[in-house]
Structure formats: structure tokens, C-alpha cells
Amino acid sequence: PIIAVGASQHCLLVARESGAMLRYSLPHIMLEHTYALRSRPQTIAINCDSTRCAVIDHAGILTLLDLGSPGSDNYGAGEIEVPGAEGEGTTRFERKDVWDVRWAEDNPELFAMMEKTRMYVFKGLVAEEPVLSSAYICSFSDLEIRAVMLDQLLREPENPSQEHSVTFEVQALREARELLEASSPSAISDAQAYIEEHPHPRLWRLL
Image (tube, rainbow, N blue to C red; front, side):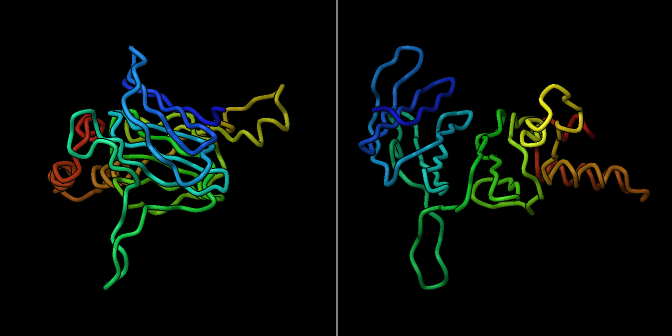
């Protein structure tokens, strides 16, 4: 039995009740690889270049898998690990009480996740300061996250409001805008230096 699926432009992931997750190529639907999962997945999300996927299991634990690409050295390497405390080895990347996750459509390193009543944005394996929210993530692109307050919407489904739709900006976009809006004479040059350190097409358009 199939219990979860995830798809990107390049691949389809199919998780079975047995704990196996099969990777098929798209559009040819050829079996490329089989991964062994530790737990029963509920949600599978793949990043924009199909090199990583996020898995939320039935207990609300989120882990990341390194999918690699066919023919590469890290193809099918498995769970992504983070350095442990001083003197300890590495441990797998893990977040608890997660109920929603979405990768950025234009950056394979960025993803947003909902953990209890907080939204976290990760760049790589580093999280930004969380934002209080219980919204369901719709899309993540151009350093903006669009989400819907689905719980509130379902209370009055016949009377939707613009307030049910919310937009969150990632830290880099907020900080670049703050630098540009500063009243100092060096605002433009300061913002340019910041954007050169955190390059993204959206930030260059803002400048």
C-alpha cells in the first residue's frame, strides 16, 4: 500500500507502508532508486532541483533526506545530519511537532515549516527567528511566503476575507528593505553590500 507521495519537475517519490520509498524519474516513470525510511511518512515535499526532500512522519517529526542526483557521489545518501554538541558526533536533522512544510520554488536551500504555532524559515540547516502563525503555507517564492488562515476561513466559508490570506517575508528581504529605507546617506551602498552578501534576484530588483 502507498501512504504518501511527493513530486517535482524531475522525480516522483512514492512511500510504501513497508518503509520503502521509491524514486521514479519524470516524465519517463523509470525506477531510479529505493530509500529505506525509519518511520511512516505522512507528507513528502521535494525541493526545486530534486536534491533534497522533507518528510513529516505520522508523529509530526520532520527529517531531511539527501536525494542527490543520478550518477553523483551522494546519490541516495539518506538522512541529512547536523553536527552534535562539542565532543559528540553528528545527529540527523530533526524537528518535532511539525504539521506543514514547503520548499521555495526558486532556491533549493530555502524551506518554510510550521511547528506548533510558529513558522520557521530555514536556509540550509539554519533557522531564522520564528514568526507566530497558524496559517497553512500555499507558496514560497521570491523570498515571500503566502499562507491562508484555513481554520478561520472554515468557520465562515461563505464569507471569505482578504484577512484570511497572509504574506510573510524572509529575513533577508526585510533587512534589505530596512537598509534602503534608512535615512543615512550611505543607505544605498549599505543595502548593495548586504545584497552582495545575500544575493537573490528579488533583492537586486528591490535595489
